[in-house]
Image (cartoon, rainbow, N blue to C red; front, side, top):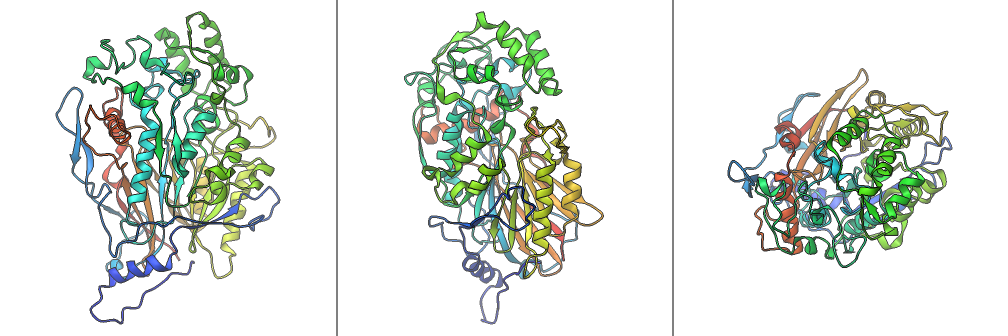
Length: 587
């Protein structure tokens, strides 16, 4: 198992926990990451090509002890009042829960433990071009995810999350350094080049104008005059205003105004999700009709509810993975479409373009170059890789999207065999194996889509149960970290050979709009602890309807998401899915 750093306590009068934290801050080299490469399908278990090393900008100094400030251990946004449109304020903290499902928590571990690694997980940012012609807002009555009243503020909300991470004083539970940020997919919403550019600038720093089409004005559904949507700028008695949504003069102009991101002060790594790879997050890519429609000058904004229900049922059941029914609907509704300004930046991006954009020096930020992806990914046509979280922890980022379509996922045989080789090579590592954390977009329960990849028709697809079995055979695996479900859930997995935790984190588009800090520690008693701590964006909980600044919009993003019709109140999960200490027995 990994080498751990112990701390002598010979000096009298020094608090052991403070000394452990302080020494860990020096020893763990905050902000260093190594991209080990995707491994072209060569059969080599060892990393291929050159090793890229990334060093962050100066991170905030780590504290000498655990802390709560800036996390949900101190306070969480909570509603005031009991009905109608509810304003948010400072709510009670979420306590840390110790979970011993997989191993008993032993007394005295707090005084023995040493830090192995710490990272932040972003997931399901869904940076949205809300004026994109392929968006299906008219399905709002069928699914709340088709259109949200707040999503025009997704860029401002994501920048505020970056600001929160940059302000953290280190890892909350141990006081050690944060090593990196890892996204777990659905970084964009519509597989759009414009959204990809916004995402990369949010993460690495830059000026973003979250507007496409006419550069002078907003052209989406919130200016359509259709009562199905919230119209913040006018007096229309729309469906959301009837529920108490406010009238906010200048909202839409502010929503498409330029936003500035400082970029993360830590190295960051990117994982792909179904919304990054598939039009609408569910239809097979590279369809000429859908590609032309995405950049064109027509947009459907309303639909007969019966037709909408039939379309969504087909999507939900996976009956239209190629988008044939969707195309038929668009063609049949051509006369009812509205004119919008065409924009080539709305074109879908391919997997190769996704990787190439990450490799662009303009988006390096704190590094590493490619943010996990390498030239080998381009050569091999892959979007998976391994990287060093710390000296003691290996990260493995998977591509769980099925290219044949549908929003659920799976792995192809080639990727599965690569994963097996990576895990086996780690176990043969000189000096002992590293601990392993696996990252993907889909959860084990949502990897049930076994359609064959059109580009590899002879290759089988493999679901969540098979992945759980594989990871469980390797005692070095501590956790599988993912998103997709938009809900906090922590699941223990015990197999005949070993055990690990599956950590699924809520999205940053649906309330409660969270990210998660994960810390790994050796307790020096035969167990390892994984600490999970949820964080919100840096925006204040209380909003001011007159404040349409970048910070004010980020605060509105959260409050509007809480009030969104159809919002699911259970997405925050139970106490044991939030701030936790997860115990594992590891040899």
